[in-house]
Amino acid sequence: MNTEFKQSPILCLALPAWEGNYTKSTVELMRAVSETVPVLYIDYAFTWKDVVMAFLGKKPGLPIKKVLGLSSRLRKPSASLMVWSLPPLLPINGLPKGGVFDVLHRINEWMVHHSLLRAVKVWGQHHFAAINACQPLYAKAMQSIGAACLLYYCYDEIGAANWTERHVARFEAEALKMADGLICSGSHLLAQKRQPDQPGVQIPNGVDAIFLNVERAAATTDRPVIGYVGSLDERIDLDLVEEVVKSMLECDFSFTGRVQDEAISNRLSRYSNVHFNAPIAYHDLPERMRHFSVGIIPFLRNELTNGIYPMKVNEYLALGLPVVSTSFGDMPQLASWANLANDSQSFVAALRAVISSDNAEKMIQRKAFASNQTWQARARQLLDFVGNTSEKN
Image 1 (cartoon, rainbow, N blue to C red):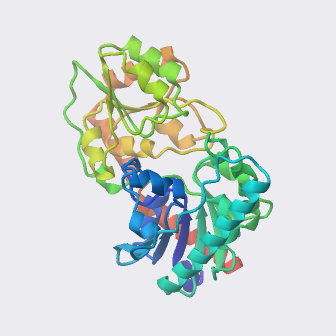
Image 2 (image 1 turned 180 degrees about the horizontal axis):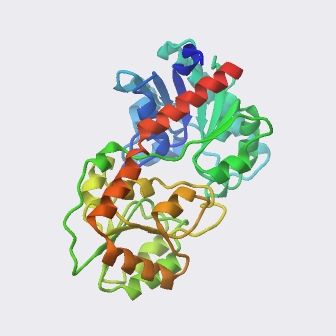
């Protein structure tokens, strides 16, 4: 392979914000990539609504001065990693299809394109690959910015999410046609979205080494802790979880993450063995999770979850935790390392079985598997694919 292509810098137009108290695959992957090549991360496209919420104190963490251009839009988390803040866009996701949306979207698209051109000029890289990470509304804005190739990175079926269902599907179809190559976190997503003759690769989510370097706390046999980390949203099989909670009063259930569906907290907080914890910084998660007896992934199986590869599975395994999950998607790796159960009775049985049978040898095996799933390993996969695709383009 031509080394020039393999070592191309990466510009990533990202859906997730760089900062925040929860794990984001795009952030972790680009952070790992930046250990090898320069990376320009284009931050989440905040809107004027977000800016107003920030002024009212309802959106902490928004880099308001950078978004408004009152200070440099560029920040450098490390020597080879730069993060660029786009100007605030018009809030249009809630608008219906048609005239008003189309006009305002073109304005947003123009603003993103010109901000990208400025970012590339400040960055100073002349031969780079561009990755659109689940930002299909602004795929056209990435054209004519000087990229050697344009890749689309899909880690979720975002068109099925409540907040994107009006517009994302049609824009993603266009973005996929524009892309020189496709990267997906799950095999189902890759099979579903790959265009004819389009180069594609599955790069599952990885795990940070901080999880591998933490030892589990001594088990508390009288009150096992069944843990979940991540957003509590429409993916959760709430009926199943409630039945499991009621059936296992001898265990504590610890949920750490953003509660995005209030029905989850409203129904489960009635039980004394359920504990909700606010999101915490990513580097603090291992200390919280080391006290778990088992990690769970109680997702519904539907269009939204069918293609995802949750980061939490590798994080649980990196800590040596047994995993009990519903079989929500096409994940052969999960079937090998998790106990799968799709109804409350079998979920309870699986939890009791892994808690009673866990031992040091099994913990070592889980950690050994997770040690090969690091973000650095995923970054090497990505750079190999970028190099191969750039050569062909």
